[in-house]
Structures are given as structure tokens and as C-alpha cells.
Amino acid sequence: MPPARPADDAGLPERAAAYAGWHLYDRLIATAESHATLNPVARAAAGIGRTVLLDPAGAARTLGLATPTPNGSPR
Image 1 (cartoon, rainbow, N blue to C red):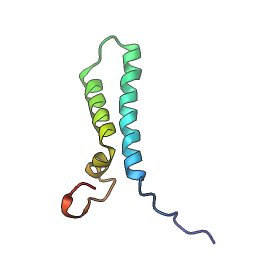
Image 2: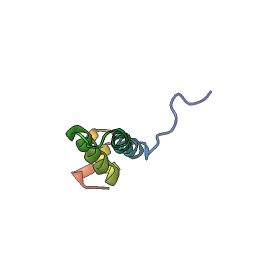
Image 3: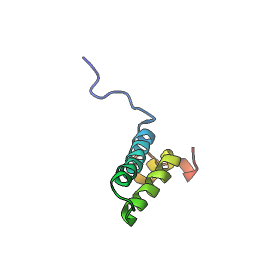
């Protein structure tokens, strides 16, 4: 009988955050293809996406996707 739940994937929260960050940045590219200027919401989303891409582990902790490390220090 297969296990009810697959083994935990330690890197999943970071990969999920990085994917979400890339998606926000990709939306900027798609919007820029159809508009000469970007509205403030598109620019803000791109900034958030960039921040998440630069530190996906920190973003995963901030978003609650990963458990915080003991004593609050980074990995």
C-alpha cells in the first residue's frame, strides 16, 4: 500500500515563492508589450516580484509558506 502522503519536499516553499515572483514579473513583460506606459499597479507588482525573486526563502517565510527558523535567525 503506498504511503498516504508523499515525503516532505524541503525546497517546495522557496520554489513556490520564486514561481509566484516570476509570475508577477512576467505579467509586467506581458503588460509592457501592449501598453506604452505602465500603470502604478503593474510597476508595484513588478517590484514585489523582483523582491521575491531575489530572496525566495525570505518571501516564503514572510508569506507563511515556510516555518520560521528557531530563534528567528536566517537559515
